[in-house]
Length: 234
Ligand code: ATP
Image (cartoon, rainbow, N blue to C red; front, side):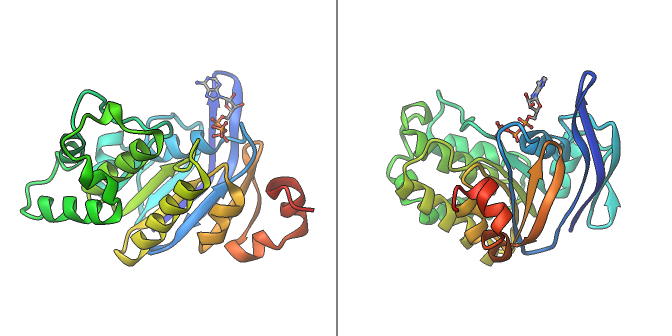
């Protein structure tokens, strides 16, 4: 579904992505892990089209997309849920979800909203409250829910578990796994490498702008070098 080949990107003269190649197949959950500053966020932003590339190719369903502006990539079905719970604080939970469906003209919007509520029941309870008053975890759920309202084919998730309690991390990761059943493909960036690899079909470890390791989630979890360097397990 998504093929990234030799992608390069820089901030000014500092090259941050130094030729990254990876692929995400339809229906997979793929985890992208690595230390702080390895370039994970930059890679997602390059895929969305908000971060300029200095080289390489991105193909989505066989079509080159690296020269398309961000909104055209969204139209093709690529949606990013950004790091840091960027919900619209002064709007209600329900209005935030409605905004996620702003491009749609079909009649299933309410049905999809109910699916988001089924996935995150706390959002249903708080549907009439302002998003700004939600806890961090609830805002994260809302950000994911809003992205889902656009019916993405490929969902790019940046650090969905950032700052959450272990219980909420599990709840968010369970929700991500359940997306797979709905045919949504997910590229998941996570600081929480063990948890992400445990739910992922496959994973990539990014190290200073390059893919250092790749494989199935379980093979990376049991790789001694990956364990020592990234998972905090001896
Ligand atoms: P984190 O988990 O901390 O977000 P990351 O793997 O997502 O890390 P990036 O945020 O992509 O890493 O950052 C990669 C490198 O690019 C870092 O060295 C960072 O300092 C640098 N960088 C990020 N954003 C900018 C920017 N706007 N201008 C200059 N340098 C930047």
